[in-house]
Image (tube, rainbow, N blue to C red; front, top):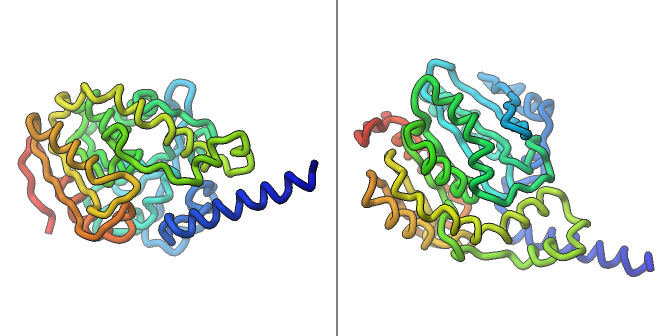
Length: 299
């Protein structure tokens, strides 16, 4: 029996590595998914400004986050996709053109990093409920810029629906917001099967989110009209994971109710945070300067 199990496990791991090598950006690594506080601090040993790692209690959950920038600055809260962690935003945390204008805050979403790693929360409303107390705390000194990438965009949209008064502006970057408008990678079928136990916890969490995603998105579709803050939508025209129709859907839902800046990036795929970071930076700074729908771009 053991002689059958070992080749099967080996084959599945080979398939996973093959799928990752074709679909995952070169900047993606297990370090970004499971990094310890010590690893984070060590990676910033040469940086001019050091980030601060913190833990925030929300009901039965404890979220790990990190922040950089002066407390007196307006706050930008970043929500990552799947699979990922707050360390995805390491490049922004090293960018003085960003953190000199805004206090950056990023968190491990539930199930990732050090926020109950491996414990999947497949409900978008539940994830938003868990993160909402942190959003409210950050907004005590003024509304927050909220930026959600991919699955993090789903959660960001729900937070904006429920707490629009706490948000200065919303950025949906490659965001998944339309039911039944995303691709499920072939490897996810293996992870979703009984043999999924051989895969890393981050892969299992992402797969559980993926298989519950469309149904969970359906539960929040009646909330778009409650988003009153200015919104930025950035999406790659060649995104074959979270289809561009997601951006169209968000624009149609939002445009009757608020100011929307809708930007599609020609020839760009799902990984625009890595391949078009200058563009992401530009519009993030623009979103930061919005108040009441009036915007001024930082030079």
